[in-house]
Image (cartoon, rainbow, N blue to C red; front, side):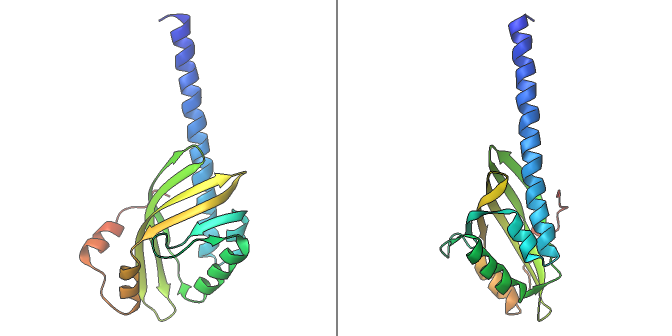
Amino acid sequence: MDIAGSAQQAQDRNVHKLNEASQMSHIQMLLGLIRAWKARDIDGVLAFMHDDIVWHYAAVIAPPLKGKAKARKLLEGMALQVRDVTWRIFDYAAKGERLFVEGVDEYVSTDGRLISAPYAGVVEFRGGKIIALREYFDMGAVNGLKSGEAMKEHVRALIAREAVA
């Protein structure tokens, strides 16, 4: 191999290492947010968010929330409805300042029902904070579980996977 080829391979390895480090920092930030939510620490959750956060909580059925004040209001409302949060990530991938995740948002409602919402999400970062969050899940299935419907067997199988993070 010539010197140019060897230098290119070294550069490719360094880019790969940089991408891995970036991916780890992004997933670690998301996991920190998840830990704060599990502890019902709203200020802790907001600490991971940029002041100008754009949060599509239910991306296809509701307009996004914009800014930390609106995010706080949503989180405070949700905190009144949930306990025993076991939010899990099954898989993730990163590209630049964007993290793609697949997981299950799972919790026990205040009336004792297990709510399991498989989802996919996109998290964008700017300046070491989450600037955008888009969550995609089936609100109809969530509402069914909230009203007492049994969890469908294929959903149970889907969320039975081991979490990677």
